[in-house]
Length: 213
Image 1: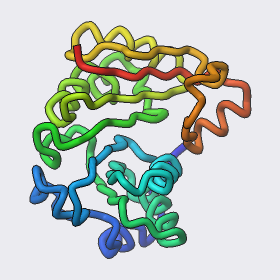
Image 2: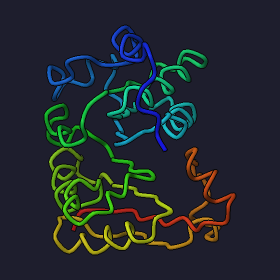
Image 3: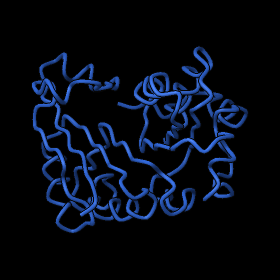
């Protein structure tokens, strides 16, 4: 379970140079945030930041923005950056529903969704990050040729995500129900904290890669 209350976490976030405040002012101008025109990739629901931190280390030619709504979880990502500083990562504390208010049309080179909250109750389906409603938001901000990558150990959520494609502008380029058994797909695979935990316990990891129709 995610930690949601750590004393002082909001103060750390407010004072961290890695966290972008009032991000709406940079909509369409993320090059100003990073000081370059390198492609910007976005992880929605970044958790403690292991995935994003590893990607940014491997690809200094790209910029990465992590979105997380829980202060105590975002704090862990900040601590990683303080221990191992990287100039090509910025963090946002915000609700994912607001993503189109901080990125302009075609401003994101791609989207990563990793082990997202399943929101198991039917009435919360629109809040699931791979829902058709969210896919429409991503369609507004992802550049031509950009992709959406989604990984989860939750088969019910993955089945839902695949079904939602019919109501979206996206189609699957890749679908696997056992990522770690696919030698080709595992080449260059960057694992999250949850992926390491669940795969070690024997859980199968599902993944899709989406492109526009």
